[in-house]
Length: 188
Length: 143
Ligand SMILES: Nc1nc2c(ncn2[C@@H]2O[C@H](COP(=O)(O)OP(=O)(O)OP(=O)(O)O)[C@@H](O)[C@H]2O)c(=O)[nH]1
Image: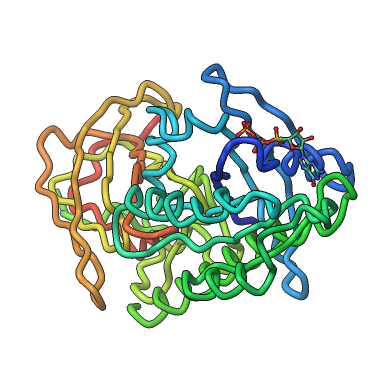
């Protein structure tokens, strides 16, 4: 294995959109090494290794989950100090949870010091509730594009597409690493 | 006694631990005397590495060349084994676009057998260290 990157991601979004469910299913598919820590503060940590296709490299993904309202507790403030990628989750049957994403994003970005903004993904969950859908994929896509986020739709209940957002985070992070190596080489 | 750069693999110095490593950019690059090569961090901070001199040295001046390092803590030990580290120096570095960080530190009480460098935070997702030189004298052998 050429390089193993360590990626720390915080999941945010409105309560009850399925953040916990998404991490649970991602953790429990059993294909790779995985661990589950529960930190004393009630923040959940999921660790998983994802190979980056065609590179021989891998990304160790640390995903911090937090119960909705406590998101910006002191503990998480600390985490935000080191740059992260972001996993922003909303519920496709709940328009407010989608509208609030810009608030979450702004808050997250304001916490990150230094020069680079965190990359990230936007995840619309609960696509199985077809008749109750109010947020269209195109609408989410358009907003995400404007924010530099990649956009996904999932149904944790139907176990649909749940790995794609995480693989995307790993790929984005690996890409950031490659870009930084270019910078480091250029400065040498 | 002759003043030398103590942080060179050609002087017998070694990096005995680093929390990150990309096999293309190993920590040995920090002490290989080549300013073109570097060690890079591969994830979350803090990140650290430990330099072993394999002898007792007294350091007078440190120069660290790096990129995107924000806060750096340096601890030192005078033991035979890499333990009993004590806090020595702490620096907040600045980042200038398109330039390497070149941090020069005049050292007091520079007696050491090991140095431990801890990058506690960075200006980016990743940081790199190109070289560390420690000007000083070799005091005695460990035995
Ligand atoms: N129909 C459907 N329900 C889902 C899906 N994902 C999660 N849920 C349900 O949505 C509810 C909330 O899920 P959680 O994972 O607890 O949501 P959360 O975002 O972690 O909520 P907080 O911890 O309060 O922030 C639960 O009752 C889940 O069973 C899905 O894909 N489809």
